Structures are given as structure tokens and as C-alpha cells.
Image (cartoon, rainbow, N blue to C red; front, side, top):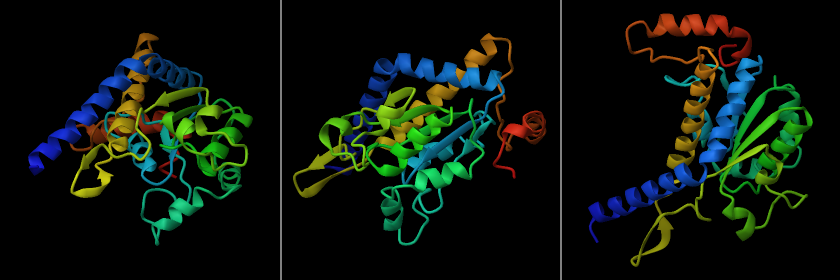
Length: 251
């Protein structure tokens, strides 16, 4: 089989997943965008969290040209991306009971805020406890996960529950258990994960929906512009000054 055909298989799989979430998650995407717009209009703050590779989608909506300036990264040391050494430590930390409580206790999250939690499997202790404890604080939680894991894997949280069980809104990425879209007879393991593509697209669709919902209410969405276009820095400076009390990545 040619490399080009394998590439085409991956693109076809990713496009198919994107079409599914566009069509099947449309109502939840609209609800998530409306919740974010409500929060912005009511003076609340926005946060995103993801562990391991799920953090990539969280980072993609923070300090992003074309994105909402109010989206902040809720960082947990050792689990943001794969920069910790050894990289396997990040996976281990996701399973530690009590870590979410320590993070939230020292974070600026408060009642009336929104926290987007991204976890492909939604089965580990960290995202489950993050959602549970955030809601106990009066924070609205948007979960981005693959619901299939809840029926095909065992929860690693003492409650036996999953991220999806502790969210105000769930966005289902439709990713199959194992997150690999391509197989080949001569390769023993499946390969080519699509979760980052799909999850990132889901969240950008939510942000676009939120921006439109704010505009419909006569509120200028606090959007950032690229610093590589003329006037971008000046635009961003104005937005950050206006909303400085709700932006934490500059402190």
C-alpha cells in the first residue's frame, strides 16, 4: 500500500469524524457557545484544562489569534503536554486522587465561571475530580470527551464514574477507543490518531458560536487578532486593557 493511500485513509477518517460531530453534536455545540456567551456577558471568566495530548486542544483556545481573549489555561504542573520528564509521569499524575482539589484550591476559579475540561477517555481521576470539584464551587463545566470509553473501559476514579457524568454540557468527540484510525496488515498496532484534530475543531466551533451569540446581543466579542497583521498589537492591547481583570495568562 502506498504512503499516499495511507494518508488518504487518515484524511477520510478525520473528515468523517468532523462531519459526525458537526451534525450529531450541533445542539450541544450551540448550548456550549451560549453558555460561554452568557458567562462573558455576566462578568464571568473562562478556563480550559486538558492533560497530556488533550492539553493541546486546551492550549489552542488560549491567547489565540481569532479566539476569545478571556479563555485562560488551567495548568496542572506535570500534565500539560509531554514536556515533563519522563513523559510517562504525566500519565501517572492523571491517576492521582486529590490532585484536582489541590489545583482548584490554588486557582482563580470561582462561582459563575466556566471550565472546559478535555479528556479523551474521561476515565482518569484527575479530569473526573476536576469536574466534580469545579461544579461544587458553582463553576459550569463543559466536558469534551469520547463517550464510547464509558461503555468500553473501566473508570479509574473511586466513584466508578467518568468525566461525562459530571458536566453541564458534554461534547462527544466520537473517537473510537484507542484513538487510531488506520490499520495495515503488515503493522501490528493501529495508528494515526485523530482526537486532536476533532477536539480542536469542536472547541473552535464552540468559540465561533459564542462570538456570534455575543454579537447577537449587541456585545462586541473580546477577540484577539494576529500580532502579525498591521494593527494587531494595538487591537489586542485594547482588549486586554478592557478585560484585564479576567485575563490571567499575563500575570
